[in-house]
Image (cartoon, rainbow, N blue to C red; front, side):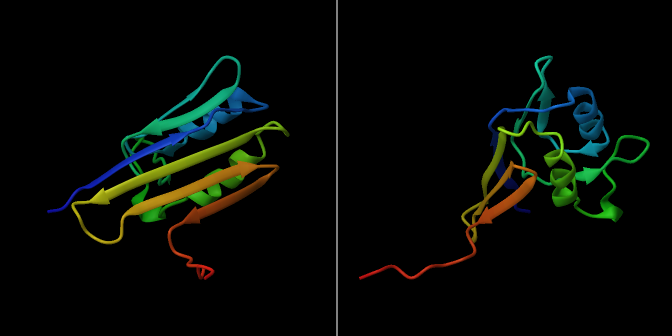
Amino acid sequence: MATLQAATTSTGAIVSNPRAVRELCENHCFGTLNWEVTEEGELTIWGYDDFEIYEALENGLPDYDGGIVTHEFLRTLADYLESDEELDIQTAGFTKCRFPVLAKRYVVRDGEVFHADLRPLEPIER
């Protein structure tokens, strides 16, 4: 059995309501990733896992039946970021030497959520 080996890290971003963001994070499962909202209101996410978010069941376990809710989580989080803040979350990983490798990025800023990965190709100029 192959195991995904991944690392996720983020920039820190100041949120307008640290208590609400803590509650939002507590109501979701981040796998083995860590998150922190400091007393100053800075949110960071990091750890050795893929950045995939599930809602939490009453017992604290992930709601796998509900599916991945990463985009919904980030859209909600976007409303709490201070106007001049940007949260940049990046994940890279691999499963043995299998193709494709995992590389993705989410950027939350100005009330918007952006996503990038390795899928689109652009021609190289001669």
